[in-house]
Image (cartoon, rainbow, N blue to C red; front, side, top):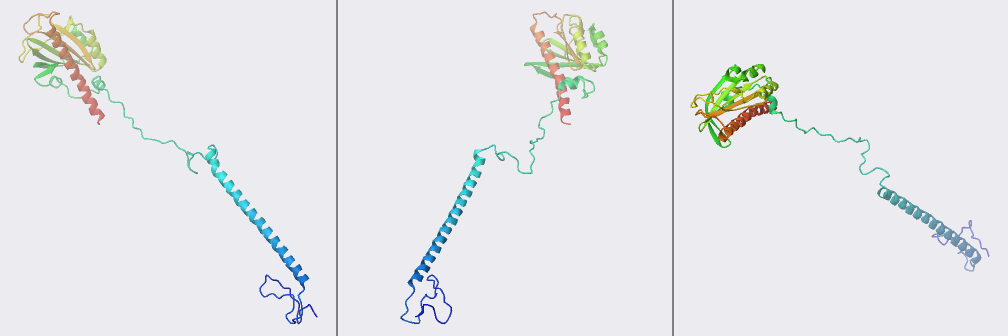
Length: 295
């Protein structure tokens, strides 16, 4: 009896391999397997399988542990920016390559408005047409609710010829170049307004301040419905200035009556015509300032 396979080299039987030959011969029916060898081979195979399973499990555990560690690191990396605002870029940091620059805006501030007085304070700027009919237009005016009818007008370059007392000398000393006169009347009270023209504001201011209403006054102007007044009677006089213009008034009764402190209507007429004259000169400046601003 032989336990070896006849007819060729002996091959080992592996029950996990398909068609592998068992360690006994199929040639003889009376031959029995070598049970000790079979048991030893089976134990060896089982041991190898356990080692493979243990090794595979360890590798899987390492892989899972690595994945968990990566996940934890990734989570912590994502949370660090949220929990630590001072790390990394701030929320307002510029993009890479960009340069922080303060925004710039075009200037929207408007230039200061032109002062109308500047245009009636100097001969070089006050170039608009000028005349008695321009400064005192129409045939009447209403001031403070009172209607005044316009009388005669006068325009002369001889300022001293239409003044009395010490006013001619004052006008000449300050180089008055022109005198515009106009008269108005209301209910027996007449007023003459005289506008003296100078080259500069300083000259006009000095002339008005030097004039004494008690003895330095304007000659009244009659005509066109207004009879002579204030030629030899007591009248109310005034002197003021605005820009390069000094303006004077003389107010009294057309009847030849002297004016007293109780004649409030005379004072009101004088005040009304002074206010009107001031506005006319100021309006002249406003018109020229507006035209210059729109150039």
